[in-house]
Image (cartoon, rainbow, N blue to C red; front, side, top):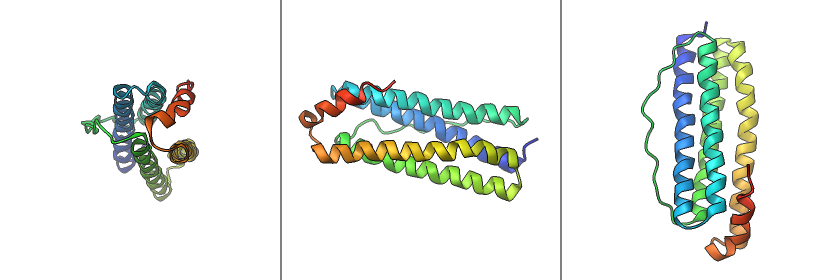
Length: 162
């Protein structure tokens, strides 16, 4: 059985992961609206991945006998100034999520909840990848210039993500 404190913290993270999916879906819609189909596709894949992260937390809570409490998901913004501004936000968001995961790890240690600590190690490793991917794309945008015509190749490249 999972402690109430850990249950509440994991329920908050379920919501945060689904918010991340919602945020990336909004970014995908934005990129579609400015005819950057590759960026839109990349964000759609990212949204699905974040949704799967939420599912992973939700399934873990149920497996441990915890009560799942689904809360309201905050509406993300819908418009950005440029692809660079989107990826600045993506990178900052992933850094914020890393902090949230680290806080959960700290709580698992405090609670001496070895099972949750072990489950969270997957997310610790995942966040390294998430930050790396978003920062690399942001740096590529900076190199070619945050101008739609200059981003043509990057748009095409990002569209290949499955």
